[in-house]
Image 1 (cartoon, one colour):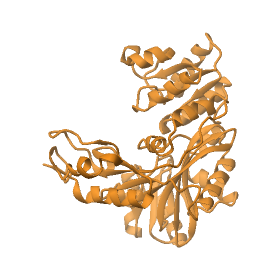
Image 2 (cartoon, rainbow, N blue to C red; image 1 turned 135 degrees about the vertical axis):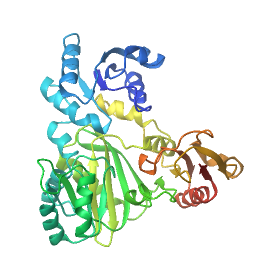
Image 3 (spheres, rainbow, N blue to C red; image 1 turned 90 degrees about the vertical axis):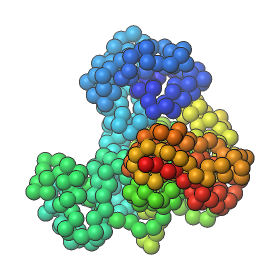
Length: 410
């Protein structure tokens, strides 16, 4: 089995996909933006060949590189695991006849209005949504659906670029902030009904359209609030009660239906959902692994190597591990008190004193390090990851860490 992987160096966990493919017996070639000299020793040892391009989201460059590789060796799969690379990889597969996620599936997993249109037609409960290219169209949607609403890029990942609007007066400024002229544009944005309720995600590994591994995680609080509010120390918790707690069967059934309707075959998936006054609602899905290194949490919680399981699925082999569900695992983001530079930590001694047995790992940037804005994400500054056999106890411990450990910046 010969697999091309797009961009093996960044983010840092990309090399684990290469490592896993090699471990299961695949030959791996990579296409990336850095020079061959920028590869570390392990990647140099694992890769059969490396082809450099200046932009891995440029279809023409990746197509030329792929055809060059094909001129020297048969290629069985071409894989991408980063959101920005998914559509390019699908288009190159189609042009070169390489199996994998189709252009249709990749498009539907990127374009929010088109995704929801297909799923609504298939009976999946979704927020009301549309694509709008002018203030007039947005106001018409608001008249029909009511406020609050969410405006976001059609192909945005997660809460990236998402803006809540609570009145007609807020729509035009939000459109401008997202690069759209309210008077009218050839481009469009996604506009959606704002869903109340708790937010979580359902992640899978699929093979031939069938779910072979599944995981459920929860956000505390919901992403939009977490990514906009400095004083909150947000948490992501992966439950170990996937197979036992009431209600999760409904989430799993919803996720499987979405995977079927969108034609996802052998891939990692990441699906967001809401549960609130209107019941369980689908939010969005991507045909790639989740961000914020969630697979690390799944691996610790389930005594497995999900990268290896992914490699087996991609190569058409039987996956080899059953998740143990031994631990609930989670992370908490610790925000600096303000933008600037980190000058001190308060309460960090609690990590070793009280929770040493429960720590997975943590990141406390050295004093003097520049901070990153809240909108940069959960792992942009300090963070702590923990485990416990009890989900409720894990939540309690993460709460204590968030209340005790402070990142002081000036």
